[in-house]
Length: 314
Length: 314
Image (cartoon, rainbow over all chains, first blue to last red; front, side, top):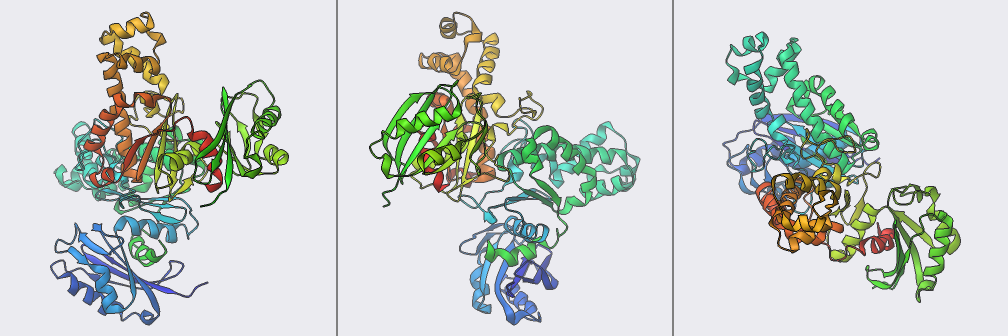
């Protein structure tokens, strides 16, 4: 077993996660700092390098991998735009890291690193064809085919949030209609809950929101379900049905051996995964369904930083 | 350039196509014979071998590739079942060919060979990520990722006919609802046309069918469109819209550099591809759309036999 060590850095809108990772994807050391979104990118990079140089194993690190959400050039390592960091425009992030540290650096976006992280952490590199689905504000995806990151012709492969399951349905911000994101993305989930509550009453949700339903979030719907609220459970069930319809399409198309679901909403998995599985049983090919493990990631908060560290194996 | 030659054999329900193919996918010699669907599989194999041994270049052939529609084991080369050849049950086709000819033989199904054929003939091996769509009785698909055939975990990858674009729509024979096949497969296309004609009158279609609309086929709808019939043109346009909705999903998910459309229905391409393109422009990501060439195959009747010959490069 190789004793190489890699450094992963996940630059988020509120936190920066840093970890020393083995060649098998295990974290040896880790640290977290706050993101100063007003700082200049170069100052953030310098501050991160100062922090990581305190890792005991820093001198043994062979490569660096950095994740940043947004429009990132995979080849040049330039961050063209990041939704979380408004000052980051055309930032040569790879070059900055390489110049200061002298270590080869790989840059990837959140979809790339989540799927790499899921491959290494959730499947211990056993999956061959893996689809990683991030359930969060939107719905992101990353694809691993033949054990390698698959990015498509222009790097947008895996934009699974914008697969439509209702072509004449609600307009999505992408321009299409009825994208799966308009059914199960966090914002839309809250919106659907508000609609649902026009027809059904929930004293638990009323209490949690002070009857102001515009305060509904997936977190609140989760808490209501935990408290036994049937309305909240129904809302999660409907979400699970839509997820299952969508996963059936994915299974029939790509016949993956593994689907890993991660992201902020997975804590509510027990309230929606049953309904999702029922739809898959009804809708997807039996052989393809049997060949596909669907995992809720056990490492959702580590996928980015570990996936970043593993970008060299992409 | 390698001077190797390969033999491709496409065993269909009515015809058997045979060709000697170069290592670049060009046909050097070809022959066609009728399929005797009542003959024993071994007798068909012997008869095919007798025929191909008459090729001038037969002695120079390095490998054999055989296509047969149905449930074919890619690894063992056993034909478990073929919809066109009812006597073919658990036929060790690879073994039969290898025993008699002494040449290494590869077996693939129609989806495998169509995509291999499209890669070699329509893109001259230039595509990296290609999706081949066969518009026929059903809707078949084959995937080439990173220049290699992608088959998924259990060999069913590319079952694109069973991607649903209307989850609560018409029941499909696969068990799902609103599969794209229920909109644009030949059988359904005729059915939709019959429905459409309840609301609209077409003297051309009435004449071609003798007012018996149960005789409507895609071929007849094509002829009516060629004759200038506006109703037939509308039916093709609606078909094109559904195809475009579906292709938008494929483009957003897989970000292919090439989509090749082949099969019996493509002759009507000029009546449906415009509508398909309009939907893609409205619905798919701009960058992914710009990166994706959509080709109508120029070799639809050769894809199987050439793709079979090229199976060794899968």
